[in-house]
Image (cartoon, rainbow, N blue to C red; front, side, top):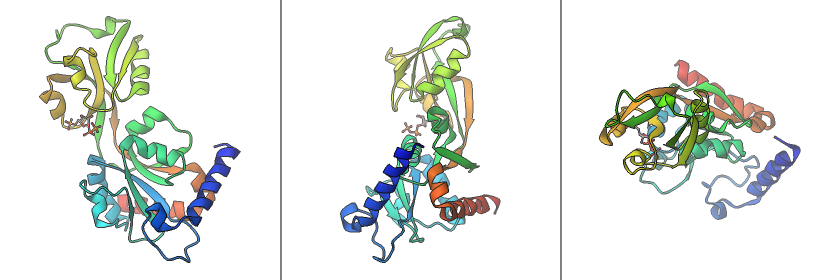
Amino acid sequence: MTADRNSDLALREADETAASPAMSGAPSRPHHASVQPLVLALPKGRILKGAAPLLARAGIVPDADCLEESSRRLRFGTNDPMLDVVRVRSFDVATFVAQGGAQLGICGADVLMEFDYPELYAPLDLGIGGCRVSVARPVADDPEEDWLRYSELRIATKYPSITRRHFAARGINADIVHLHGAMELAPMLGLSRLIVDLVDTGSTLRANGLREVETIAHITSRLVVNRTALKTRPEAVTGFIARFRAALAG
Ligand code: PRP
C-alpha cells in the first residue's frame, strides 16, 4: 500500500472516530471508546451458514439478526465491543478488506484467485464453504466435440480473470461474457458456448441442462486480513487470527 493510501486510511479512521454512532448507523458503544472496533466482513449466503459455528467456537457472537438472511441491516455489533461485523457479497469481502474498510474478512479462495489483491493476507484456510470452480457445457452438446481444438471460445462467467488464465494456458482466447449471477442461462439463450462457475452439489447445473466438464480449482473459505491493519493494530488483529486458529484446532 502506498504512503498516500496509508494517510487516506488514517484520515478515514480519524473521521470515523469523530462520527457519532447514530449518524453512521454503527452499533452504539460507550463514548469513552477512543479506538475504533475492528470490522470483520462476512459474506452472505452459504459461507455465512458455514461460518456461524466457527465464529461461535472463536467466541465471536454477532447480534442475532446478523445470521438471518431476512435482516436488512448490514453492520452488526458482537459480544466483543471491539469487533463489529458487516455482511456483504462474497466478492465484496475482498474489496472491503483490501481497501481497509474492514480489517478482517472471510471469503472463498475463488474470490482471492480472481482479484489477487496484494493488500490481502490470507493466513488461515477455514475449511468451510467447500466447492469448486468448474467449466460446464450443455448436456445436449455432442460429447465427442473437443473444445480444446478451438482458438477462441465465448464463455459466460463471474470470474473473468480465472477463466482467461485457465483457457490461455490451453491456447484458447476466452471471449468473456461477464455476468454476476444466473450464468447457467447463458448457453441456452445463445450468449456463450460454456460457463465457468462455482459448483457445490451440482444441482444448479443439472436443473439447467448443463454438465461439469472440467474442474479449475477446489475452493474453501479463507480468513483474510488487511496487511496495513496487521502493522498498525498488530495485537488486536493477531489476537483474532489466534482465536480463529484455536477454533479450527478445537
Ligand atoms: C453458486 C453458483 C451456482 C450455485 C451452485 O451461486 O453460482 O449458481 O451456487 O451450487 P450447486 O452446485 O449446489 O447447485 P450462489 O448460490 O453462491 O449465489 P450467486 O449466484 O449469488 O453467486
